[in-house]
Length: 180
Image (spheres, one colour):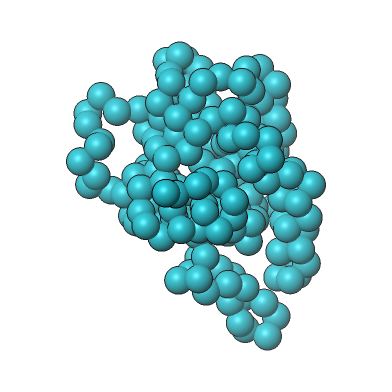
């Protein structure tokens, strides 16, 4: 992603901190350790690698047996919003996508999600890949969030291909793409 369209890491971590404050929890030690591993992985990769990350729904015609992808649904990654102390969800799923920092913050606290990003980077490096996909049920929350984290923390020049009108609209609203 071009630098002007990437989410500043400070904003990302501020959102994670705000999220943890709202739900009155701390990031568990396994998630902290996963982030340390991701930092190590990122330090060993070329952030300028030419890479296209596709976001696809399960059953997409673009997925073939030879496709390089991770199905975050199968890994148990969950973007369901937790509730604040008053019992209200911190966001409404139909109003957000994985482009929204709130969703990324929820994912960032899950070891499974960070491990998925690490696995993706390992697959990309080991296979010297130029194309990779994250897959989930509807290609809207989990897979998009993981792609955003991978691009923000590891592959800074990666292009992300959104496959639904909803995620394309969200990307446009966030200034990430121009749809003409």
